[in-house]
Length: 91
Image 1 (tube, rainbow, N blue to C red):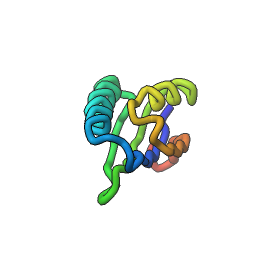
Image 2 (image 1 turned 120 degrees about the horizontal axis):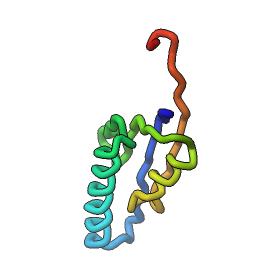
Image 3 (image 1 turned 135 degrees about the vertical axis):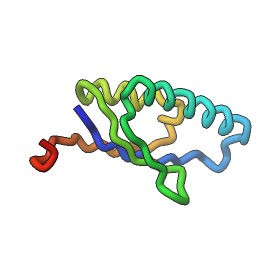
């Protein structure tokens, strides 16, 4: 099943630079793992922000939640998920 996933990242201004740098590095590594595993099918950055939008693949909503919540920055995210269905023009 495919999902459109919109992620907004809100890190506190009070977060120490070294903590933010560590989280961003861990986020990139985990994101690469999810991409390599085929969970993240496509992903785009929203210009001028830390936000992104992507097409993710999972067996169901629970599996998707597990993947998203495994991201190191999850505590600092607002996530919007839309399940996708095949459009007749795609069949």
